Length: 78
Image (tube, rainbow, N blue to C red):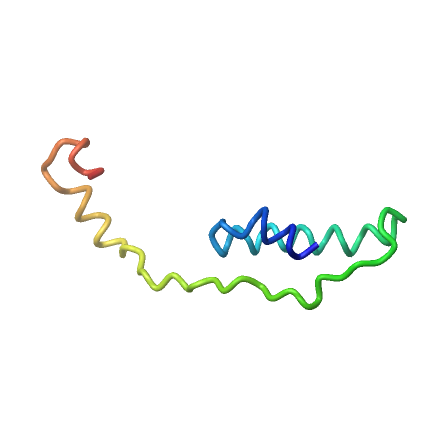
């Protein structure tokens, strides 16, 4: 099952793979309860490494300064 998961989702970004893996883990945990799967586990599967976004958001003052610029609206979005 792991090789199928890696084949289908291995090319995706780590955060996307983590989301799909979480959904699969949830389903695999539920399927034995419903009788759809005898038993299975994803316990040995490592979660994808997701890098932390260290960029900072603009402050309110910076956003206000951008809106006060005397330029056409189109130029504010570049």
